[in-house]
Image (cartoon, rainbow, N blue to C red):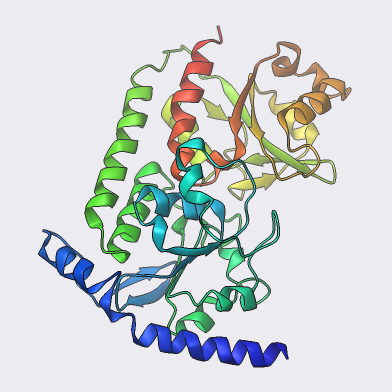
Length: 339
């Protein structure tokens, strides 16, 4: 029975892809064509090493996770999202009204599975995590492309946890521009990039000068008692560099590294940055992290813990998303309070 549904849905997808050449609407297509710098279809890009061709502006996009949906909403194309998944934190108030109109295609805090994805009849799939587009999850990218459904995966996560060369905010802004081009609204991408760069620039203008940089640990969560911390090649590392602090695990082999409490103690951070997560996993919340650090015989003796030098940031911002730039002013203000 399942295979029958998949075949029927695949056929519908191919038919949909074949008639999608008009973009969001014929009138919308004519309007876009009249704008300077408007997208000329078809066009191709290389994304995470894969060539992807776009025949027309997507009308039925599926976002594999919440932060991907939020980016499209901020680009002004949220009304073209026909499904999303992997909700793992509270939706920001400024977009909550738009977001709640999007059908959720997965169980809470779970990923969209392949058959459910096909049922939505997408003409574009966008994911912030490479692991969400695999055979065990939403389906492999090559498989979707053969069905006439182009995909886009953030360049920050072409492979799980692998460090990214030159991970930076301009890389995030380029993602906005590419998505805006895909949807035929290039001006929206430029506007969003400019607005976010202004947030970063304003915050960096308030950085407190120090004779010696503070050492920080970006404490994300734990797995089976082992801490996970930010390493090199991700936005937390770049934010550390921008605000003038030293990430104690900038020599790790991955952007999110499995470390040990002995290593943390040996490197003795001046400040611990706590990721506030709402996934429901052990030690995800800030209070759980504080309890762990203050009660453990080893970590309770750390200078940062004894001195109560903690900074809390939303964990969702540590992975590339629309909210990521907000880490900079929040971190600068908090660091400036530390003597």
